[in-house]
Amino acid sequence: MNETAVQPATQAIVIDEVFPHDAATTWRALTTGDLIARWLMPAEGFEAVVGNRFTYKTTPAGAWDGTIRCEILEVVPNERLAYSWKGGDDANVGYGSKLDTVVAWTLSPVAGGTRVRVIHSGFVLPRNETAYRNMSDGWKKVTRRLDATAAELGPSGKPH
Image (cartoon, rainbow, N blue to C red):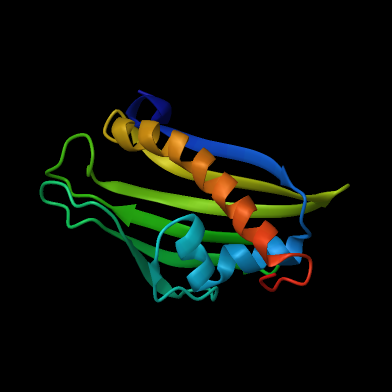
C-alpha cells in the first residue's frame, strides 16, 4: 500500500482578492487586536509575534467549549501572517469536530492596491466536512469585512 492510500484527504479554503489599499494599511487591519474583532471575532491575547498563543471564542457544541486555540507561526510585516487554528473535540461529529488547521495570509502589492490571499488549510475530510463547508462561505464574508475595515483606516492606516 502506498502512503497516499493511508493519508486522509485534506482540503484548503483559498480566497484571493485585490483590495484598493496599500499593504501597510491592510496589514494594520489584519494584525491589530481591536480591528480583528471588527472583521473576524475578538482575539484574546493576539500579538503578531512568532510563538504567541491567542484564542478566539465561538459557539460551543457538544464536548467542545467553542475555543479556537491559535499560535503565530510566521510573521513578515506587510507580507505574510500564518497561525495555527485548532478547536473542536474528538467526540463531536459535524459542527465542533476536532480541527487542526493553519490560516495563512499573504499580501502582495499590485497596481491599485494589494492582493490579499488567505489559505485555511488542513481540513480532514470527511471529519471536517461541516467546518470546511461553513468556513468556505465564512472566509468570503470575513475577507469583505477585512477590506471594509482597512478602507475605514484610510491611507495613513489610522481611522478617518
